[in-house]
Every structure is written in C-alpha cells, then in structure tokens.
Length: 331
Ligand code: ASN
Ligand code: ZN
Ligand code: CA
Image (tube, rainbow, N blue to C red):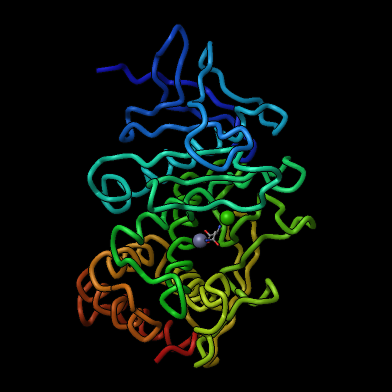
C-alpha cells in the first residue's frame, strides 16, 4: 500500500491542475494510485519501451511551457485522469477495460513527431512533441481521443478501415469531446472542435469540426456510398456531425463562447437533446450493440436500440436519433 499524494502541475493546455502522485525515493513518481495506477513515462526522443518514469523532488510539476520536459507529462497525466473520471462519472465504467486497471502514457516520442496514438499491444498512449518540438500533442481532447481508442478496442472492436473505421475514429472524437466538456477548465473549455489547442495546422485552426466536418477541407458531412473509401479520419465526419446535431441541433448556436452553424442533408430543423443524453446513447450503442463490422447503417440501428433501452421505444430521444441520422443521410 502506498499513499496517494496530490501534486500540482502547470500544464501547457489546461492551466494549473492537480495530479495523483506517489512518494518514492525521497521525492514523487508520476504514478496515480487513485486511477488504477496510471504511470507517465519520458521516452526522451526514443520510440520503443517505456523510457523513464517521471520523478520530481517537490511534487510541483512542469511550468506551462514545452521548454520544461515535465510539462507534456502534466498534460498527458491530466488527460488520462480526466478521461478515467469521465468514464466513471458518465458511464460508471472502471477504466478502459472496465476492470479498474490503468493504461500508461508516454511523452516525448521521437523528434518533432506530429501525432499521438493508442497501442492495444502495450495498452498505452503515446505523444509526440509536435512541430519544432514545441507543440506537444497532449491537449485534453487528443488525450481523451487516444484513450478512447482503447475503450473501442475493449468493447465494439470496430475495424479500423472502411465505414467501421470512420465510426472508430468518430467514437474517439465524441468521447474526447465528452472529456473536454466534463473537465471544462477556463484554459480549455468544452467545444465541438478537435485539436483546437495544438496548432497542428500552424495557422491556429482546429484539426476537425463536429458541427460541419467539411470545414477541414476533407471530412464528410453526410453519408454517401463512397464514404467508406475515405481515410477513417474523414469518414468519421458523418458520425461526428450526427453527434453534434443530436446534442445541439441544427443551425447557428454558440456554446462556451464558440459559434457553430450545423447544416442538415434533408433541410430539416433539429432541436438537439443535449450532449449528456447523446453521450449516453453513443456509449450504450458502442458497448452493447456495435461489433467489429458495424457500418453507418448498423450504427443507426445500434443507437436507435440504445435510445429505446435508455429512454423508451416511444421516447422523444429515440425519435431524435432517427431524425438526426436522416439529417446526415443515413436511413
Ligand atoms: N492520432 C491518430 C489517431 O488517433 C493516429 C492514427 O492515425 N491512428 O487516429
Ligand atoms: Zn484516432
Ligand atoms: Ca476540443
């Protein structure tokens, strides 16, 4: 038994945060015993193994800049903790696999590596330092996205190609967004944008937009019979758009100071049922009805069934799910 200590971290993207740590060797390890024993490791430019577990003398971590190598670790550890807490609070789920066991995180992967990824083989997530090694891919929505690839692998096991791959990617965007709204810090309030903090495009624009996915220049707003031939990060647009519309409705709307304008394929006007219910429906569909080969038509069936289970077969929520799939041309 080791006591859970409370450290303080100055993150790059989420402000000053508290961190679960563990006393060790006259200082503290970045090991969160309160959330399954999640550990955060420094790969120090390496691309294999675990590098070294982050350790600190006084339990004050990072300084909010990428010049301090603890800063990316603060964001990664915070992201894993918030995602853990979101799964527990929203879904009563104990960790990715539901068994109370933590994944682990690795930061400072490679040199100026502009990506982050989940690996089922290590049950871990890994973050590059981004362009010039100054834009680590450790923002909260990205961490929640990567960790949620683990959740999908532990539940529906959606194949990472064709339409099921788009649904896999969208699930990570949807749950990563759920984490961001759950955390909702002043530094990073919840939004329906993906990667708005990491400047991956170098011009300040987000990686993806859920209200109108085609704003990224590549993603699909609506289903068509060729959507499965797109990269999975673009075919995800149909489900991301579904999630936005089901949550917030169509047309112009401002949430947490960000303005959206979401169109519909069929010209319908949708009111939205709220993000909390949309998350419940998606999670239940993912964990109960979707399988490795679920496509968009199957996702429609799965979410309709989930809405019936949660709210009733004649509920307005189930009717909203049907109307929202029609609004992204899934019938
Ligand atoms: N960051 C990417 C993702 O999570 C990595 C990949 O393309 N698999 O989707
Ligand atoms: Zn992904
Ligand atoms: Ca976001």
